[in-house]
Length: 95
Image (tube, rainbow, N blue to C red; front, side, top):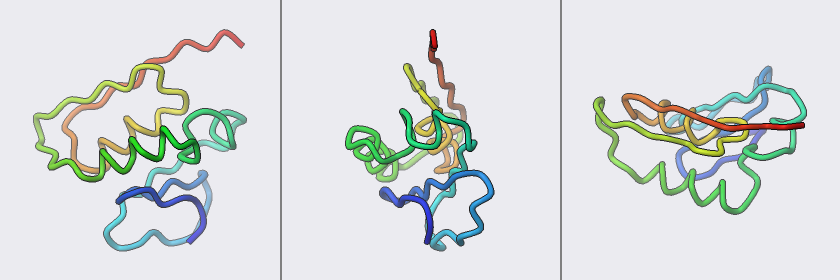
């Protein structure tokens, strides 16, 4: 499939028609400059490691997740898609 697969998360850009594997949580990011190669597109080793870690958790509806310095918000989006009850992404971009 197109995009990146990290753990049980399939990260694609919005509009990508490639199907996700049956057991994958699909996270579609906007096609702006940040999502298309900037922080949080799933390609950076630290983001990939976090997506794999999130994939291994047993999420419960009452669980909460904070993605501080979220960039595109891929980790917060992935947490919600994987079953986390509430996720928030916070970032400050001065550019």
